Length: 191
Image 1 (cartoon, one colour):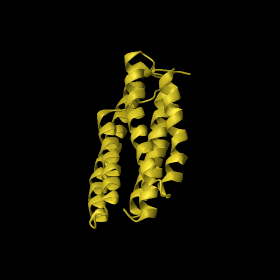
Image 2 (cartoon, rainbow, N blue to C red):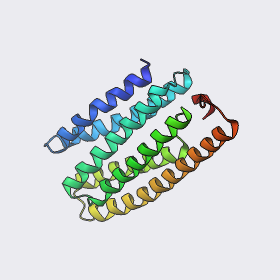
Image 3 (cartoon, rainbow, N blue to C red):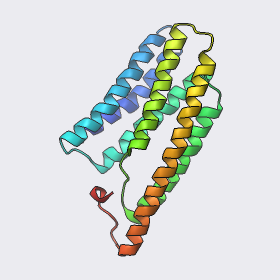
Image 4 (cartoon, helix red, strand yellow):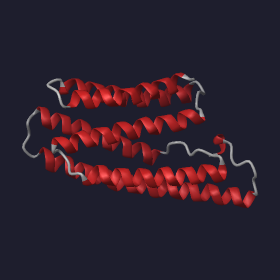
């Protein structure tokens, strides 16, 4: 188990902590948990790349931690009335599409597509939406729902673009796999 993988597991364990704190008078602590999760997300990737600790497990754990935190945060915002239920519904639909497509892709090629810049941009936009929502809530701003909903729409547009780009990358790699007639698939370093 590498240090980046341990950090990803800690992020997964922080999800219920965040949710539990969000609906208490200690909501500000949930904001700190959210910030720590964002920082640790950046850290695990930096450590993995700098010390050559990139692993197949890490390529799976990291996005799982991201998705669990994103979905739980969006769900808390929905319950709180900051955004509509359309946002988690779209997120779940997109992530199920990516999960099923990624599973089929892995089964055919034995490759894991590492995070790309457009996926990271989408995660950053979603994180920024969460942070702005928290600040507007703390300031008790009346237009919080409208602002957060607009940011969520922009983020979902980027999320869909990201899903299309990941799908295109998977199709391209799968076609290369077919053209080369590989039996054992790609090594993860080839992806």
